[in-house]
Image 1 (cartoon, rainbow over the protein chains, first blue to last red):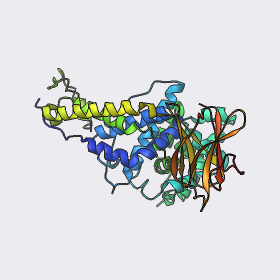
Image 2 (image 1 turned 180 degrees about the vertical axis):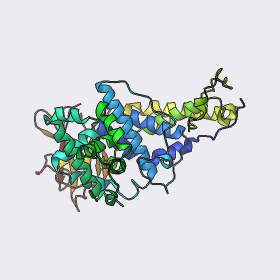
Image 3 (image 1 turned 90 degrees about the vertical axis):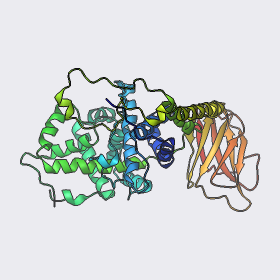
Image 4 (image 1 turned 60 degrees about the horizontal axis):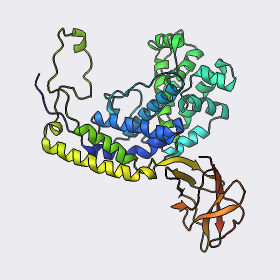
Length: 181
Length: 246
């Protein structure tokens, strides 16, 4: 096997990635974990993983922001769940960069800013907002949410479904693909 | 064109689609949904669009500053990785190559048998080592300034304010986007201890400022009032306040 030079992961690339996304990343991790130390640890792992994957920040690609935040959310939820029941899985270094992601469209973050995201969330009826927040920011399953709210599981499922429908409309996600049902 | 559901599509599968997008679906329900969704275009589209909406939801969390030395620690760890010598120059081929592995997607991660130029060059390693020493020094210097807790102030005014308590026991008040107090006025921060007596802790004439708080904030209430010049007693109403528990 012949050793061949690999692309040099410049520290400057990590710095650019950090400068562009760290405040939102820390805010999201803190929102989920409620502790600055844990939030920083999760965010550090995400930035290092993105950097090791050779990703460079390209301002023209808004999807980078969503990609980073998706990893921060996943990592933070893992930490949160580990506190409750299971060990944290290490982040895969080969995490898919935005252009290879199929589940988070590239335009996801480019045309919706933080304020409109908050407005969309706050526009939900309280019981739907609560269920969505417990699942998304709390990492709770529907049965755990049902137990916490002392509500039937079917009710929680319905609230989450209605809440997501509401969010899609509020955020202008391609509703026409589902309109005829 | 709307996505078409299959014949056995029910409202329950649409509920499960949402749970799948949230990644909270488990066990038998997960298996049942995945089997259904494999042939149901409507469920596939629903999961994709739900995930898109949820990805945007991550933006709803308020932005936040990390510890002052967080960036230095991150860069220090990256520099340490760069300076770390490779454990093995050449990877041994597997004794019995598994043909199924050939069909695996090529990982983005750098293969372990590759020696990057920055690791093989003594100059690059020396520079990286110097960088590490510098960052360690910075990290040690700023250790005492690490925030250990942050408390958001609540109130009816626009903008945000928070108290950041540092490891050293000192604290600062950070205000962002609060309307300036107006000509001749200032914002004054107060530390209200268990005895209920407010003590002046800081002043600022700007609604976006970071000011050190004089006094120990732990176990107190920190409040902000608008004053016509520096005052020794707060003038009601209290605009924003928070309890500092740590």
